[in-house]
Length: 211
Image (tube, rainbow, N blue to C red):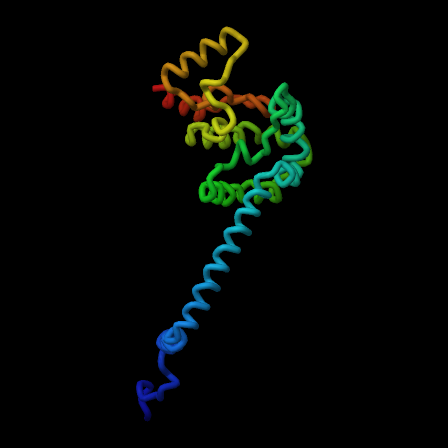
């Protein structure tokens, strides 16, 4: 009975045959140059496409295309000073909730797929059903911003340029500047959307930041 090990050249491992084909191809300098240019072009196009998707994914129009965002969160946003104010500045959703730098933004979008799945696996047909989950969702957003030292807030708001009109705000900001505290969400956790109660987890996280 013939041994399985006595097969001809056709039985050589595919990886070895592939390596041989690549070796033969790149033996020609012209082929190597063409392959390098093609790879660079493909890489460049992929980055352009990824950046365009990132920009579109950060837009308010994209975010509110989901029912719960458009019906509840966006309507709350329109009642806030972030929507209508003396300066006319109106941030997009992504400017508050997605990192500015490319790779951190890609990570935020990947983590955001959880929200997309939740949108299609839960019932958001009424405001009451949305509010039943509000505290948990608010906690998630607040903890994320706290862990990131509110860096998205500080892309627009410069601590030294903020001039509160109320005495309480003036004292709070003077104290924050003295302590070099820049974690905006620790105080401004009900600034844009409908008020959500503080959870024990977020309350403890605020205390640990202040320690």
